[in-house]
Amino acid sequence: MFERLADQDFAYLTTFGRRTGKAHTVEIWFGLNDGRVYMLSGGGDRADWVRNLRKTSHVRVRIGTRAVSATARVVRAGTKEDELARQLLDGKYQGWREGRRLSSWARNALPVAIELP
Image 1 (cartoon, one colour):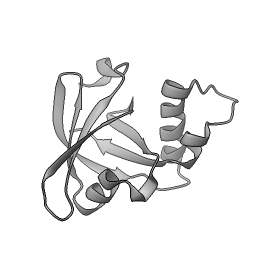
Image 2: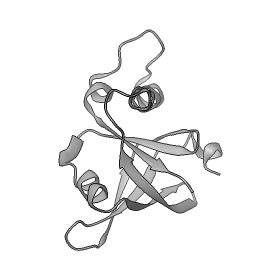
Image 3: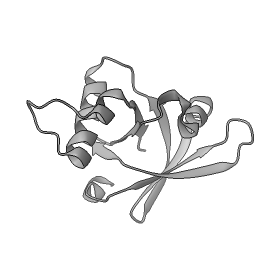
Image 4: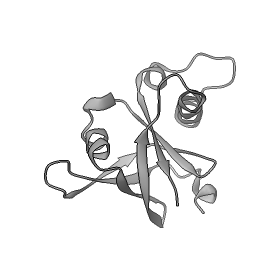
């Protein structure tokens, strides 16, 4: 459903406040792979959107004109999925290519996966 929108510049992720429950939307870089949206948090666990989704995994994601409710999770460090998320986003936004070192941003950011319905 979203695959044709993979070249869009940004996604819009809505999380729900861990204290207030109010919706909060951020514009964020993203990558798509196999029915998942991947994002990297440059602020790691300190980013409000990450702290919110850790409390409530229910999120909304919009890419272009398509929007859906989905489930978010932090990707487990050191897994193939962790490596995929970093390479996917670094390739799209920083020009990473196979055989090259990932950018500092991609190496140090926290990967998050959004499971599309």
